Image (cartoon, rainbow, N blue to C red):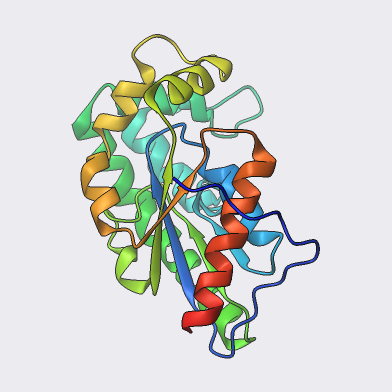
Length: 213
């Protein structure tokens, strides 16, 4: 991949017609860091993980999760223990599908509402959704960007999160194949190197989009 041009201080992406950019990539590829780079350039960062945390905090959703998975998914304060639930669902596809049936409709609605509100205000949107393809939200994107990171870099990032051996592969198996994600993307952001270099790639991509919109 070609080297990016230097980062432009204060670069703001504000096309005449706001657009929706969707991020895809492998587990532990650094999509969250890339999403923050887009947000720093004026896009509304719609973070599916944050919406998921909000949704599972709702009384009715938490009650449904306890009914489906047992009260041991709660911590001592009665809130959802996300790590305990993750251990359960990534080890059992049926459990994962049950979780998605309970939470995904509300998460999807929250994501779409946030995106439409930003677009109505003239602000472009960055959809940071791990299951962008699987949830069908890719159809709402005007542009899809693939975040690339080598297997070695992703493994190192997973290890730095304290994940056990095999956890990265287990989580990746629950998502669409990397080759399919890359095929659906128009642009690729290289996130193998230091963060300033990644920011330069983001700037280059936004300049290209500005020229084409």
